[in-house]
Length: 270
Length: 277
Ligand SMILES: Nc1ncnc2c1ncn2[C@@H]1O[C@H](COP(=O)(O)OP(=O)(O)O)[C@@H](O)[C@H]1O
Ligand SMILES: [Mg+2]
Image 1 (cartoon, rainbow over the protein chains, first blue to last red):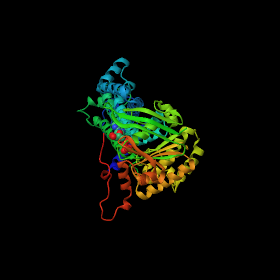
Image 2: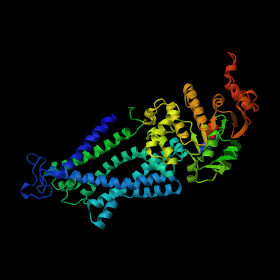
Image 3: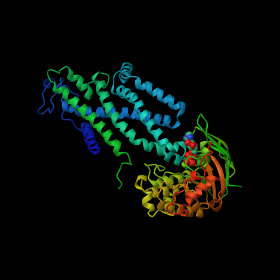
Image 4: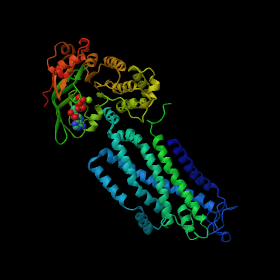
């Protein structure tokens, strides 16, 4: 059962990655160039999924959109993990007022709507992929900090950490050699789930015009474009919607599957 | 000069200052093996943790613990870390949880070596494998490359023993090292501990609740009851001429061979039933 989740997740995520990689070297048509004579074609040949309101091949835009999606996911999860995990580990290992401080600040950030942050950044710097990534990344810091803190508390209270301290390991050594590897599975799971959240958030922001602007294709701004032709060409909205669903589902399944796979105690004896 | 001098050691826990240890004093000479015996909750583990400086932050410690003449109480983590695993090491009770599940056993042993000697990885590996063989592991190479969950309790406890012994500490504290193991494995681990201590000349504070076990490793024994030491002496003296009623109870329960068939087995409460604080 868990294995099936992991495999399905890997296949879906793999499909998104492959699409992104293909788009680097080849797309059936130009994903940017407007072609006035080819507007709103239905699915068929040679435009596999048809064309949008600008006459651009939808399949080509989907492929390039996968790339934007992955980049946004990687960067925003990266920002969240690089800041959140050390903060959570610090809070968990040092405890006391530092723990209180980190967790209260984290609560505040958590309570602050990511959308508001995105609007704020977009109005100051102009909406772009970068402002979307930063907004999503910052909003995801608390989730990583909490997961890392909870894991750290558990590890620090364990017998093997007491034994390691008894063998002369310093606090720093405990953090690097024992806490890090032991919380890696939960952080990995959080990263995968965080990826799904980031993809959804990016789509929402682009859809609202707070993320990557046209003509760069993202699944979110494709939805936005499709909206005005919803009654003329409803399939146009289906394709990016489907792509978003596949990616979000894939990363969620992957996260669930990883939870078990990464735990060495559950691994089979070779 | 004694290797370890514990004097008037007292420990209280938490805001309500619950006394766990009261006026405990003893010394261990270089190479001496001292047993510490007492029922569960009597304060054996906290005594060991106090010497190691590993008590939780809610513990209030008083008195003095001197190792090789240096006062340990009040030292900071850095100073303590220098001594732990090097001058004094500890074997914990629970072999199933005392090893990091994410790290190969050989690396965990090598880590203790690296922490104090800064040995390069090449010769470290050799010394680790040799040490694992010395504590009686048949297939030390394979054990070194295994994760803890791939080993049996007895194998793990011997790996932990290897970690405690690899830097040739002056003092090894063993906190009920065989309690979690079954009897045949227990005997083998004790024998290897005995051999390893003899060959390295390390002193040992051996904690147990089992008088039969203590007589296999130690010559001198202290009896602890409710955070106090109530009797001290040689193993023989304790067996033949126990003074404190609690000790008499311990001896009777350890000497089940002297119970006639059909007779009720003795329990400690037959001899000592309270006087608790
Ligand atoms: N972290 C702690 N907080 C509060 N009390 C503790 C703590 N650790 C031990 N104690 C108390 O100290 C006493 C001695 O415990 P311990 O040394 O573990 O006994 P044992 O002889 O079984 O090893 C017990 O009464 C126990 O409840
Ligand atoms: Mg104990």
